[in-house]
Image 1 (cartoon, helix red, strand yellow):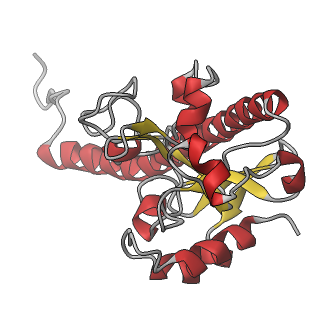
Image 2 (cartoon, helix red, strand yellow):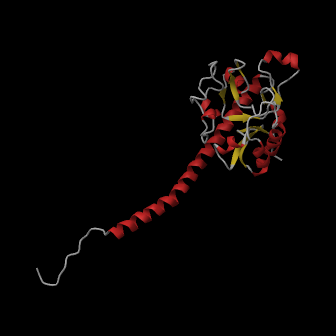
Image 3 (cartoon, helix red, strand yellow):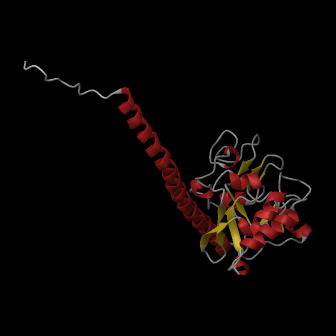
Length: 241
């Protein structure tokens, strides 16, 4: 071997490895938020599609019931606008009317894919499916417009004088939306806003700014109806002007 010639190792030095690792970490830090946003964008689009399917189910129901639809709420609070089955009343209520009439054959369409609260997700320990087990309350993943107080027993309509709203009255008004009963309901899915379906069948994304002040007052479910004025203001803000 000629004198003066040296062979250099092909291995990386510790410093070079640390630099490579640092670059990879930076790239991951840049890419992860982008991937997360892309996934949420896809879920938001899926949510809009779900709402349109919910609207179709309600339209079929209206067609078979002289345009009358169960757009309303239970008991005294307009925050109770997403229930399917009540284990206290032992009855199907609100969305449960669609279920009993056979219009919830694709139950996944009635739940937001971005939701991470098991109380509002399909077929969890807290929200089992199918509904009807007297041990469990069952909720849909969307809320309907709390237009009128709907008795749990349809037979009591004659006694209360309540009549179901007619769908044709709500062409430019919000009829279904991501849950807005409390601020936590918005924060457990899309966070920055909600998807909304209108009576004419159209659906769109609405930023939470127009209704955020009223929403933030609804810190919990209040069975007395304490937040009913705020709920009315939220739904009014969702209506198409």
